[in-house]
Image (cartoon, rainbow, N blue to C red; front, side, top):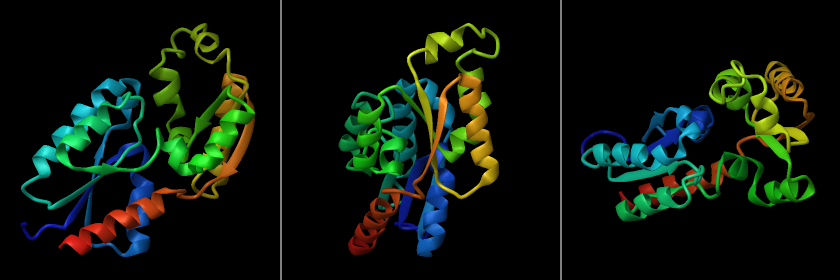
Length: 204
């Protein structure tokens, strides 16, 4: 291994701030981060190849690599490329799962299946990542096509921010959905990243 950090975390940009905050809290100077654009969530079939490329390019620099992604709509393909490379990832199907906690998320879904979720990042970038990418800004009639079966918007808040809460509430109003806010903090990301760091240090 070179003199670089012993562990690389490849993260979706949508949770890069949270991963970096966890790194700071843990004082993990030996962790490096590389982010992949959150825009790929509109084309999830491209996520596995993007993650695999990052891993393959980093092999000569890092003995330990961890991926901060859920399955994110790849239908198991991300897990396949990670298994081939012996790399682990965050548990869960998507960021809502590991931010809310799997049990809490399942309860939310069971209570009201027609729920649309926002995180801090998605609330801040709602217009670009939802309205513009789905073409609703250009074709307003698409709103009902995409969101006609939804009844509420749940904002999974990582921070106590009045500004971001206002953005999330505005997104709910724009979509015509009932608004709810649930503070999650970093959720299950903390123990998962801590376990990855402990494993990296144990192997070093």
